[in-house]
Image 1 (spheres, rainbow, N blue to C red):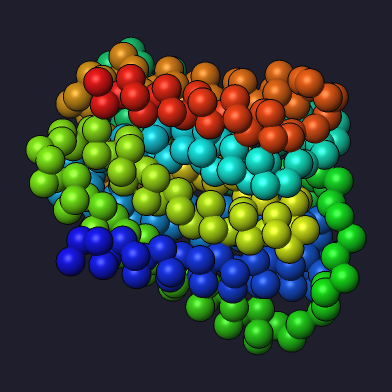
Image 2 (tube, rainbow, N blue to C red):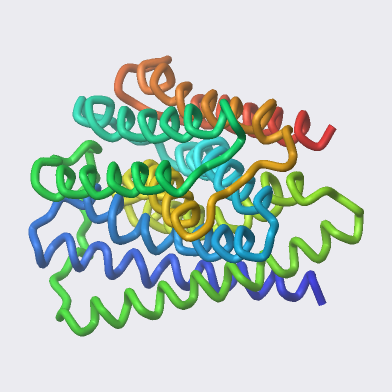
Length: 311
């Protein structure tokens, strides 16, 4: 039964990613907004919804390690697994505004979370308010000033679609992603529990990968359809949303207290490492480009994280 949940969840997530992409492209064309902005707002928020649901429910049910581990593990998976697979499938050319705006914001958000949690192992309500406030400031800046940060390929099938269809695509895509994630998490956690794995290990590996499947589905579909701006913006934006929105909102509702110190001694440093390594990879071996070699580096890093964490 657990395997059936996983399989059904994957199907729903792929379908949802496709509908969400249609809505994102439609919005960017109708409003004249750069696609990376749509990717970092609409798509990122929708694909971060599973993390938000899982983290809030976990924190309220008294499982803070799942709430935190889900976000930390998901951020590592977004870059080490999802971005890796995406750029192995197709390289991405990056412009200067990417590392002047988008990457620094992700780093600032990651460091904010690190400094809030590392000294006392608690993400308080006031710290949550600071995180959400930073998100609001970032979104205002993004919508007013951000320019494309990725050189996108010409897409022949871009067409302006009616507003009601955009809303319909968003609703269908969002519901499919949410439902798919729920099924996937239920099945994956059920399978992991059969092996007697701890809550933290489940959270940073199985649950986080489960909640990162929407990002993987949306990004791979975006790359296959030559919408690389949405693919890159979705991943960077999703990591920002995971910290600022998911942990921010969750800690405002109920403060999160770390119970498994492995989150502070191990997992959070892997999240910092995967976030920082993107910067040099953009320049090596070719400047302003992420290619299959970079993907292999990220994939190796993610594999090392899973191996060390499980051990």
